Image (cartoon, rainbow, N blue to C red; front, side, top):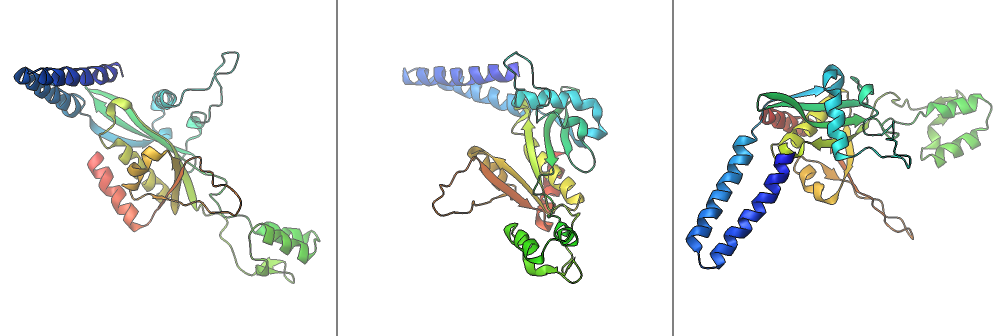
Length: 279
């Protein structure tokens, strides 16, 4: 991290000095410094910081990296501290690390070799949300069996946004059988790449690996939110931005961009191509 800060300071300084020399009529010296600076920056980015042997894992399968993952996540999103100076024990971005499993939540990480040392270079997590599963429509049949009037139950269904006509009073059953166990979508969050290794395709690799893992669980869609400056990054991966519904007399408020990726054959093909290049 220190090296990155040094480069970030030296690079603009050298470019500024060389530009001043050119403006002060010492063009040969200025151009020489400029060429050396650009060459050094290119070598630093493409050779000195070259990583190899990139591997993608589920965290619970390689628990020895838990502390590294926690450090990476908290370096991007510091743990909140109380007024008494005590760190929040259940910080939302790290408290689920120990809960990672083959279903959800599932923490994913990328490990790579740099200067002969294998280390965690990226992380993200797939989570189930309150909107991941279809609602349990059978609760309305249970309401009927408890003796509630059909009209009241149908009204409850309508308020919840369902078609009340699918409820059969005589048999206290649904005329259509909903799928109750399938997970429709999951949220991808806490995507982070170590600053010194950004620009090497690791972010794309993590998204592709997450898409493969989600597809393997039978999930149809991955959703998530991001800041405006990250929208182009996700759109290059085939991720789309979902438009908010316009409501009359209610101001449109957007705290972020809601993004989604449908896990179809095209998404699977692209994910496989990205992972092949990343490794």
